[in-house]
Length: 100
Image (cartoon, rainbow, N blue to C red; front, side):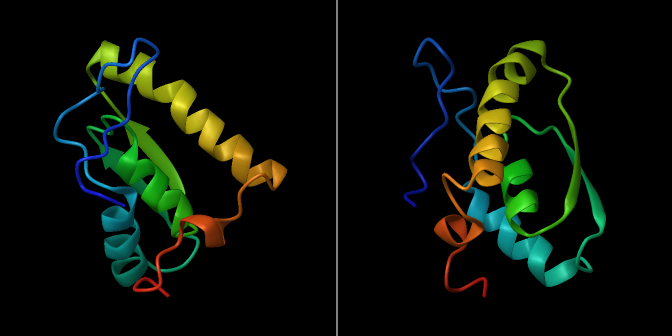
């Protein structure tokens, strides 16, 4: 995905302008963490790294101190997880060939 795509809150405002694509976190975690391990994402922001960890097949603990970012990203991450669980989307829809 383009690097400039930013996750927006319910008002259409970018949650954070320093958001990284989830594929970056996914690639790093796939290449440096044992399968099914648990990772902690500090300063989870808009949730890109959290999504990347989920797509890497890891258990995730996310931490975000800024209340606005936390409140904005939580429903977005929850929707992402629900779509994966319901089969609306599969992990293959999000995994990039360079990660496999």
